Amino acid sequence: MQYGGDISYNFGQVGFEPFDLEIRASTGRLEVIVDGQSHVFQDISLAKWPFDNYFKAGNYIQTTDPTGYSKVKLYSIEVSH
Image (cartoon, rainbow, N blue to C red; front, side, top):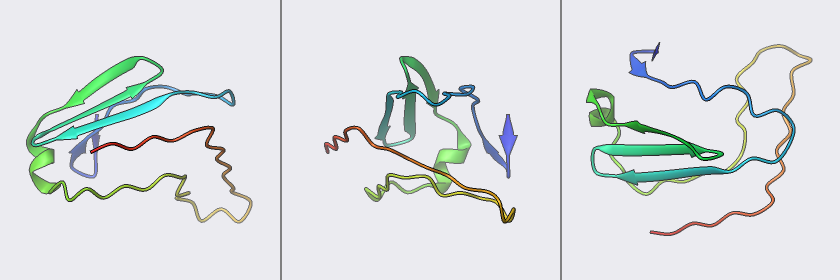
């Protein structure tokens, strides 16, 4: 799937129950794992992203709907380099 010129992958909906998310980044490779389902990005779109060890955790809602909202609850977080 293309999104703004980048390639994306649809993991489906996670619903309202806790889920596991893991991101493994290395030179020219990005692996995203959601509840054990893995997808590797290893293509031309990665050339646009220099990995400068930038990390944020949260939900950054992208809507202009005045009734839109988001809620995130982190049960645990672990970061390693």
